[in-house]
Amino acid sequence: MSDSIEGTVAAATGLQNWNMMQEKDNLLLRKVLDGGQANTILSLVNSVPTAPQLANGGMVGTLLHTTA
Image (cartoon, rainbow, N blue to C red; front, side, top):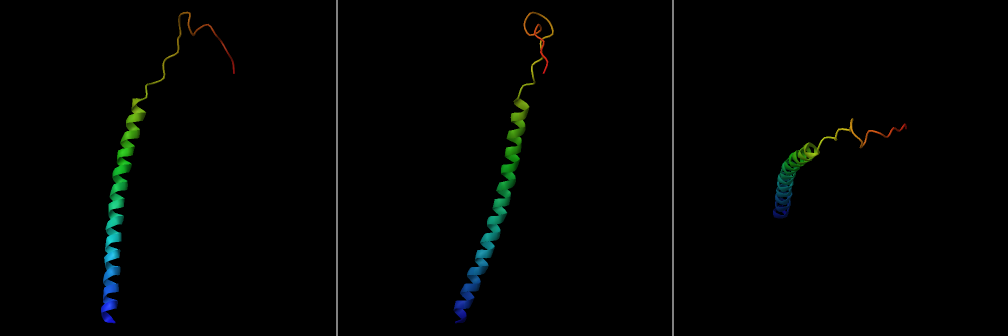
């Protein structure tokens, strides 16, 4: 009977250790992905060109007046 209990305790301890290692690995993976995603988003935001300047002279884009 005691062999059965010792085996159960050993299995439970082993599962706890495995679970702790998996959680540690998942946390590391999440940090790496978050950092990589942040860098990707930042590079995308920085790659968007600035808004073009409106025309202030000439025939195109300067003769139409509207009010909202």
